[in-house]
Amino acid sequence: MDIDLRSAREAIRAAQEVRVEQFVYVSVAQPAPAMKSYVAVRAACEAAIREAGLNATVVRPWYVLGPGHWWPLALVPFYKLAEMLPATSGSAKRLGLVSLSEMTAAMVNAVENPAAGLKIVDVPAIRAVAKTFT
Image (tube, rainbow, N blue to C red; front, side, top):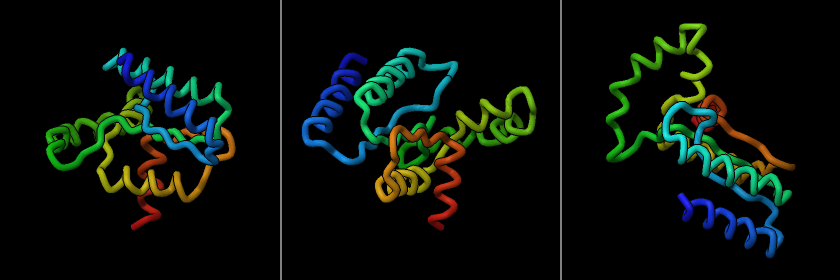
């Protein structure tokens, strides 16, 4: 995890040095009950972006489905049920699965629509953006 934080800090430093107009960072859905160290490092990276004062879009997927990464499709019925229950709906939506095409649409949107300040794009927003690209 040290490498993740170090690489983000170096990317931020380089972005500041060249006065990049828009910084796009792929983080992870937060908060999350699993992968606490991974989520903590991503949160620290996001904090560093915020502290640097960059115009940035932070894209927060939980799990991206794509070639070699299809096994979570077996969880879709459980996600649908969890989204319908008031006690778990928010978490199920925030920690939902997104497809590679949805993620690509979110990244293209982040580049084409630069943020003023810091913009967070969570799973529901990733899905919403993707619907506008179809």
